[in-house]
Image (cartoon, rainbow, N blue to C red; front, side, top):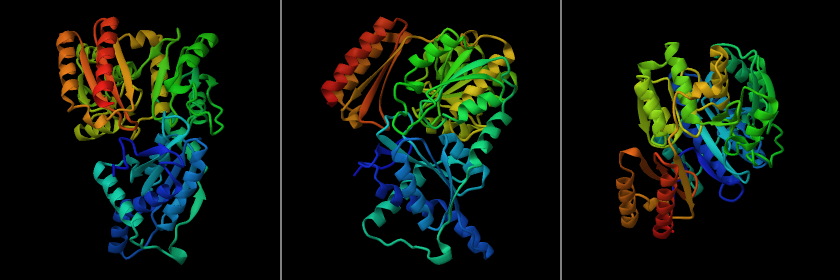
Amino acid sequence: MGRLFGTDGVRGVANEGLTAELALGLSVAAAHVLTEARAGADAAHGEATRPVAVVGRDPRASGEFLEAAVVAGLASAGADVLRVGVLPTPAVAYLTGALGADLGVMLSASHNPMPDNGIKFFARGGHKLPDELEDRIEKLYREHAAGEAWARPTGAGVGRVRDYDEGFDNYVAHLIGVLPNRLDGLKVVIDGAHGAASRVSPEAFARAGADVVTIGTDPDGLNINDDCGSTHLDGLRAAVVKHGADLGVAHDGDADRCLAVDAAGDEIDGDQILAVLALAMKEAGQLRKDTVVATVMSNLGFKLAMERESLALLQTAVGDRYVLEEMKRGGYSLGGEQSGHVIVLDHATTGDGTLTGLMLAARVAATGKPLAELAGVMERLPQVLVNVPDVDKSRVSSAPELVSAVAEAERELGETGRVLLRSSGTEPLVRVMVEAADIEQARGVAARLADVVKRTLG
């Protein structure tokens, strides 16, 4: 039986792999594991206060019944629940910390299609869980799924549930409060992906002084990520050009990431956003140790730009959790991924797409320079990414024929490019990334390697 937790919580097709029963059981287990510290402190001081959990979700239709299951599980385990409704993942993380809650739960499958959903837990302070805590939750869940009885509170010991409508304003106020300057004079198009940021992001940009145009901000429970948001930028490109905007910002379903487009409608990816923010933070004396943390998927052009600006670059495995772990370990203040997960650790415990977009726009406003000029600090080298679905991703680093093909490709590219094969943490596929000085060479090498992946792992 495989591990339930992937690189970013537990995900699956809602009501198929991810059922109400699973959501309820995991929530009870999480309540037990994540509130042990509170129980121990209460016992030491001779008091008995109930733990508190913050629960939020994105607008997916399945989030309604999964939220009910999660809330039921938490309350049945004796935790009081603050239900914040539809808010971004980073909002749930922020509120978990700001309200002194013992844990947070976010229901979302991020950029995945609408039928999927997921459960993500946060520990006290709004921090993502390390593998050790996830393993403990999963172990406890499996034990009780096999028949072991829970210790269940009764009477006044059960948790209470209430809606925490103040969460929206509290989170937006936090975002505005950490901005270095206002956005007056900027016109910004926001694509909310019909997701969790559909209200938050436009409100935050408007309060910061921007003239806001919105697309993808009418969620109906079924249209999340549907031809919109950070995975489908064509609508944003067209809207920015149509409205003569200074820039456009695109979120994913749970708004923990942000991509952008400049005034001409050209994409500004996560590497370029990191480069712009790195220089801004260095200038302000906020880039600790003059270091940026990114992943091995970062464009070689980003690495070269950081070297040119005398900034250090540390690279981790793919996944914002690994970026965050390295940032905490080394005490760094900025990190992120090419996909648009950007973490500003002084102001957020996880990637925050709205905060990232606000800070990018603030840099444009402060310098008076177009976004295209600011992003020009780095030149993106041609990079081709091919997803190969329905293969045995566990053998991606061990299949002899594939290992040989990768070595041959690396010899062909030499020092002017690189190859990276990795298995997806959330889907049954292998990602083939090839970088080269010439786009046609990158495409050819990527196509050959994708064929080998299909043949050897299919």
